[in-house]
Amino acid sequence: MKKIILIGRSESGKTTLTQALRGEKIIYKKTQYTNHFDVIIDTPGEYIQNKSLGAAIAMYTFEAQVVGLLISATEPYSLFSPCITPLANRDVIGIVTKINDPKADCKLAKHWLELAGCKNIFFVDSVTGEGVWKIFDYLKEDKDKIPWESQKGEMLDGSE
Image 1: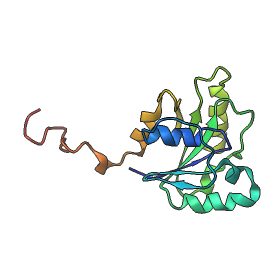
Image 2 (image 1 turned 30 degrees about the horizontal axis):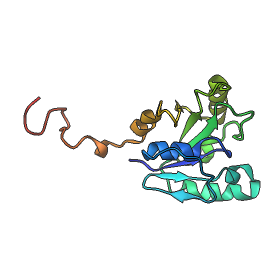
Image 3 (image 1 turned 180 degrees about the vertical axis):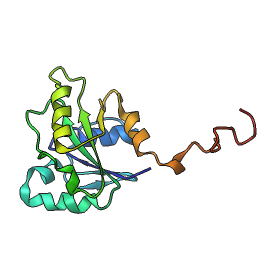
Image 4 (image 1 turned 90 degrees about the horizontal axis):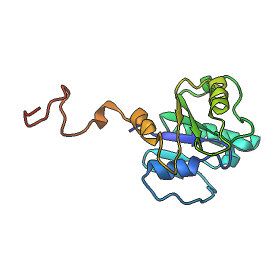
């Protein structure tokens, strides 16, 4: 799987999404520092919210193949500048979280991510798991195919 770094403001759902992607029980915990897992880098929101810490985020992106910009569907504003994605020399995707919240405005969150330059945008509810599998599918590489299938889609034992 490709490694992804999750970037977004505090309480946008980065750690909750990390827990959902890892199949863990969802429990709120504030991320205090950059956490590295097998294929996920979870960053504190303060890194993107504070100009002096922004350079640290830029450096951490070099450790991943995919940059995930997160915006909660309940956000009052976007931290991401228009056309920011070309600054990363990585694949950049948008992720809208908290899509089932009563205050959610998924259309506005999507608009902000499109303005930032995201072409691929995913909508997730990390608590219910809705949409999380689509991120898994996106991060999957060719070598990550199911081991019992051949390249032609036939079973390795010859049966179909």
